[in-house]
Amino acid sequence: MAYMTPEEDSQEIWGEAYLAGRSKYEAGQREHNTAFPTAGASWYAQQLRDEVIDSVAYTHHLRSRLLSIRSLAKMMREDDAMTLGMAATILDYLAGDRPPKHHPRPHPRD
Image (cartoon, rainbow, N blue to C red; front, top):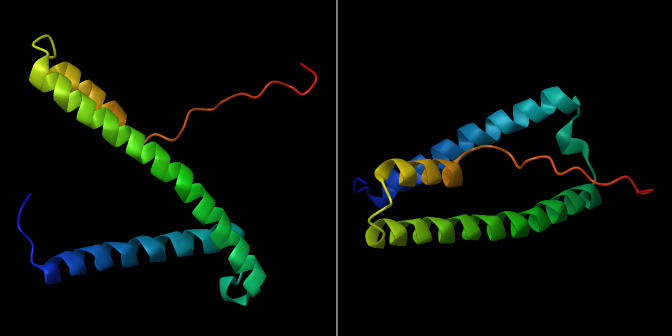
């Protein structure tokens, strides 16, 4: 990891956030065909509340993945049977960008 000045770090963070935010906004506009700025305050409050609640679950699972990565690092240091290929496969799984698997719910009558 190369050293960055605080200014370079800030520029990278906010440049990426600007591009991602604009892209997400425009995609939402195309998908929903709404005038986002016209919503009422209570609607915004509910949307934000839902996002905050989701972030608790996301944070929980992210912390779990980080613990798994630390566990893998320990195994790589201590277990001679752990190959680089095995470690790479596990890291790829932990760091992957796949969405959650579908979890079928039983029918209410079952």
